[in-house]
Length: 475
Image (cartoon, rainbow, N blue to C red; front, top):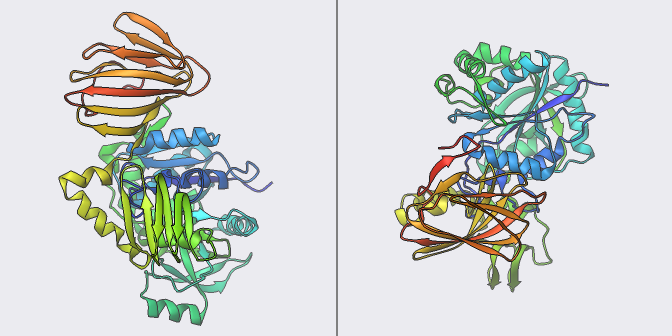
């Protein structure tokens, strides 16, 4: 059997180009865009074949650690490790840290496949064939990138020009091309030999580190020290902040791929998109006879070539063409599809205004080590949330100075501590927690516990909390 590949999934980005579904605290890799599973969960599914892959390693921002753990649990995928970046330092530092960490566990010859967590890929025969070619090429001493056969002169992607063919079906990389304007992209497609740069790589750990040491030694130095000084926290490996933050902020493309003579590319025909904008989602989606992609709660009339997506209220769209209409639980975006690349400018404008900045930061659903909550309704001196608590998990023993809480059990069984009293609350039962009382919620059952929480008081911010005891080490 051929050597197994260790997937390294990079899930630390905070992009907001799919606003209002994506936010800085819930970026696109963790949200459901087209399917009922997140892009991160789809990435896990693509590397689930145990005959080919070892258990995945995820490297992510420490703010997303519970998103990663919970979504992997939902997907039924056991992770080899979750590495936490203390600060953002782009892909070169993240990849170097993963290579050092996995080299120490699996040996210098470990085969690493570096994957973005937010791409849409068809995992069919073309994907499997590309993996096989890339694995053989990587084992021969190349850093392999996956080039996608272009279907249009896209200006939102970088390109790779193929060089001479190599044994086994891959090609040498002649050069990388930055995102071109339309005329340059059209010229490249007409001349042939150019592929979209997917940002997917496969290489031996020792070769990656050798090339990084040659072309970006400060990245190597910082990443190596951060791994050596890493600490274990619950199910997470925390890279050392003091050393990791000394790494230059540089991508693996700039640090290595554009400089190395050991780059190879596998020309791939599998369907791929980085889903970087709403027009990309429209291009990928299933269209009706008028060219519309309709997802979720929506009705369209006399509408053409548009994307209509709702995760909340029912959208009724009439008499428009070439637009995106996107509704999240708390915001609606309407814009032309040909201006979808400009959503980032709109998000920056919203973020600059105090009244709307929260719409760019916080998603209504937040994950915690015990489960999480979804904000349902906010008003003057009240707030309604849906809590979901995983089996065997408990919230911290805590109190609030400015609010009282009413908990209603809608699914499962809850064990509720208030002061010195412990009560069992079953479905359709409720309990009241007075302002200032110490309290704790615990799920003693085998299914996810769901509670409706009604908060009332003069201040309802998340910082109105005093934790007396917490099994997750939070203060």
